Length: 232
Image (cartoon, rainbow, N blue to C red; front, side, top):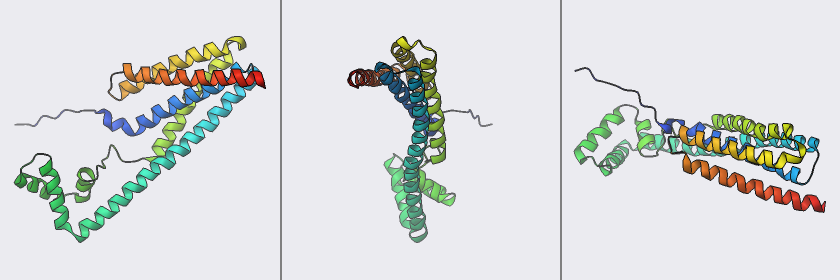
């Protein structure tokens, strides 16, 4: 009989860039909108609002890129160190490593004999990949990709920051705070829905979570701008 195959697409295959994309876009929207709202609440000029937004966009994008690259590189370094250690152990004590792999499969529910057969079959191929996947939890979908994370976060931060900045440019100066706030919460709601859908989750709770924290940030910076702007 001819074997039947079907293509499955799982959300876990997108986890690397999706996390960085959602983080970058959320941070871009919230931080830039909060800066603009805080400055607008202090009754600043249009030029000050635009300059603040542009400075926040550029600085934030660079910060996100650097932060993602450094943090994900740390993960990549740890993975490389674990793989090097595993490679040495496979070369110096292959029988013990085979026993270890057998024990892993037996703990997952296979009979001891079948677990041994599976361990031997996998070890006959790419033995390092088998140990990386089943012993260390390192797979193609979860492996660290610093450059991808950095570029994704920087790009999505820039797009997210451009949204409240555009609103600040076109809104009447006297209505910048409410227009940017409402537009920002709408963008955050859309981001939460898109991110949850792309990740295969139900969108209601993620959307509400993103909107809540965005509203809290806007309220806090507006209050600071109002209080300290009046004092200054």
